[in-house]
Length: 180
Image 1 (cartoon, one colour):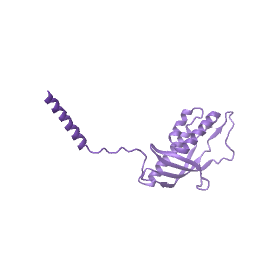
Image 2 (cartoon, one colour):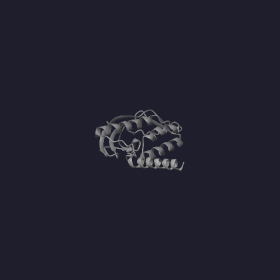
Image 3 (cartoon, rainbow, N blue to C red):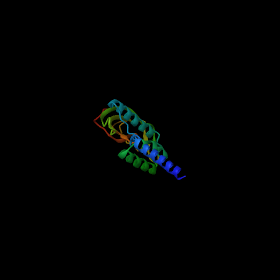
Image 4 (cartoon, rainbow, N blue to C red):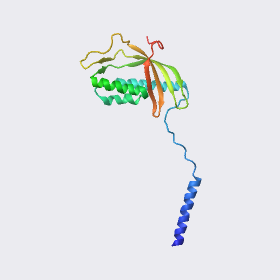
């Protein structure tokens, strides 16, 4: 019986030693699923699609229902995400409502960096048509200034995140693009 136990123990040790000594090294698991692109055109197309999805999500927001904000938040990152969260929370609390849909009338590439290393940043210039959008307070009075341009020139920055692409910045781009 002792002989059988010793033989079994030796067999186990041999299997363990063989398994630990002959096993190939594990392939490292990527820590990020940040996208990389072969060309600036591919990166711009993906960034533009992300921004258009963001505009579509904005068009679906019902300021009386915070659950509708989540699709917008999912497409933003960093300061833009914080700004959207703050604005929507404030507007919801004040009983503000939006009607109508905005559209992207044009988009053009401004710059690309980090194309192949996962630190992608795409700057683009956008003409954002808000002519059909109205924003009203809780008494139904419009909050839109009469001198608001129907089509707004914007600079949009889209960056790689661990989950894909996200809108990092939206700012006025007066003079950088003509949206006439």
